[in-house]
Length: 439
Ligand SMILES: Nc1nc2c(c(=O)[nH]1)N[C@H]1C(S)=C(S)[C@@H](COP(=O)(O)O)O[C@H]1N2
Ligand SMILES: [Mo]
Image (tube, rainbow, N blue to C red; front, side):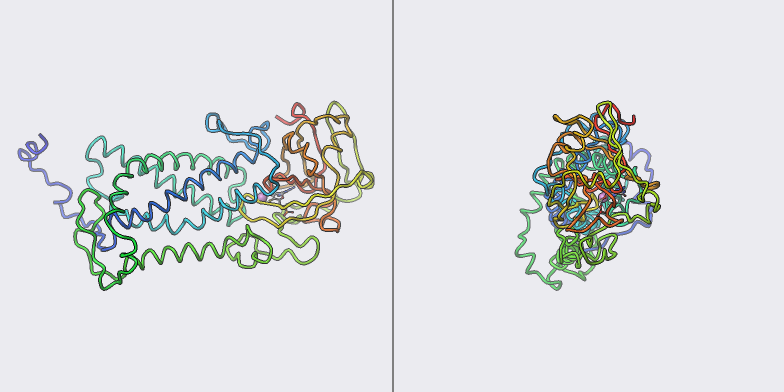
């Protein structure tokens, strides 16, 4: 039918018009190489996605409109659950994996894109309804993927360049990306399996540049160059290059999650500044100066206001320090992927503070406010399970010394298993019970 029409009106096709299209001459491109990258992503991306969803849940976004203001998260929040406080290193592991794996996969994503780039510019743009749907899913896949990776990398490198809005952007982007990823993986699976069976990985790893030839012509995949140039790199070389890139990124990233002396290798870690020696010598997220904390915000006039159950108690620092003190060995694990090793915190249990206003039985969640006048993270809400855990403290000391101003003097929250952002510094007010929280 279409052939008949073509014969009647011999309109030149795009290919016949001599448009100077790039010819994509690399002899390495082909279904096999693309499939190798695809398999790595097939293993890695679901782990990224699950740890990402976990991180979102760890923010307790369904607690009033306090921790997360994503509009209409609605259905996408179907899976949210109470983030547990056990094991106490939970978020340290899930987020360390999320960020490290995300960074390590960047070279693989770029290589995969390189390997299929002729397809992205294929003409005519649409050949049939099926083809149109396929290309639309590719647009969502490539667009969603680049967007999710880019926002993630920017967030860990540039100290939250989208304060507040990072979460919805990265969250929605990841749903688009993962939806398209699943569709794409299902559609291409048979082709991928066939391509991988077609060549032996071990033989390929023994093939030098001199014996490297293009994969057999494969009009079905559209990846193999019709006019391949002589090779300048073997497939082994290409895989090695990508692998080395990932390994290098791993080496300069993982140290920030593992912490301790390995932090020194974390060249890519954000806020690389030295926190200095001594008991307070561990990673600082935002210094007091960077949030423009004034001396008077935490000086003589500082008070801790505890509210809840219709009562209010105001404590001076002296009175707070006379309350029963307890110890907790806990890390700080930031959404950015860095974490500290376990620190020895000392302070007043949140359950004891709730009891001050009469909530001495199964206290509810708490809304925590900071004396900091500017910037984000001035408040955070904790869930009842976090308040009730006896390791959760309003900490006054760390590693045997008074909290430094940058670590939250006179008092900061520390909670097991939770993201660092829950550990509000320079605390000035605690409001127990959701009914009294700001709407
Ligand atoms: N008031 C206040 N508390 C805060 C923050 C902040 O910017 N302001 N940053 C939070 C974040 S995101 C993290 S990871 C931890 C880091 O604590 P640290 O700076 O003592 O390491 O503090 C949290 N508490
Ligand atoms: Mo953080």
